[in-house]
View: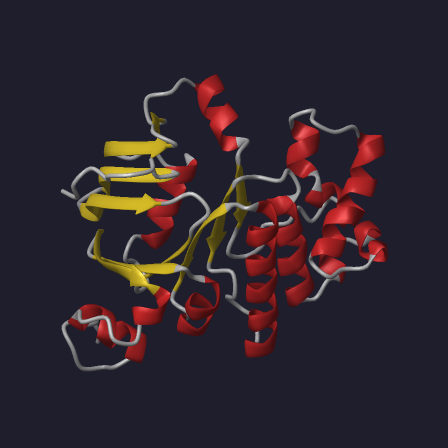
Length: 262
């Protein structure tokens, strides 16, 4: 297990995290730290446990074992009310955007604020317009429906929702999935800008190495339920770890083998 950190308390600290679904062990004694104001990108293949790790930290999935601390405070043993207070500090951009089709854009953007009573319906549209401007969308977009938006616009609205409450911890689940390379670069640029503006800590998961290079201060790789390598984004092309090197190159040959169904 990773030794306890010295120096400043990590914003997020995970120790010995385990999660299984039936006989399948997805997370296996996983350790991870994320510092205040750091942008960490977690890379790894499909089914490696990236999304499960993120959902455990956020509280959408209960781990089977292990510790998750936010600013040194254990959250896995918290009661519901206490945990909701912690979650109020989180912003999340889901892989598919996860916009509510039955709500106009302005209600989507301010959904969390409205649900928790931190803003009135009268105030919400104005707040949504402010946040939409931060992701490069005109105020007229506020009154559109999600079905009227392109894929790139939906991602930007989802990003606006993630930052609307000015969270200090942001999570991004495959933020460039389904986007062309140019729009992917646009979304990554907006993510970097929003994280810096908020002074937030960010955790992103992706298998898109171009995206990882654009948004990461540090990169960590998960393999078979554990973090096997972590280092600055500048070291990703010469990691000195064969699994990471194969993944970054997208090479067929190497220690990572894919099971093929016949």
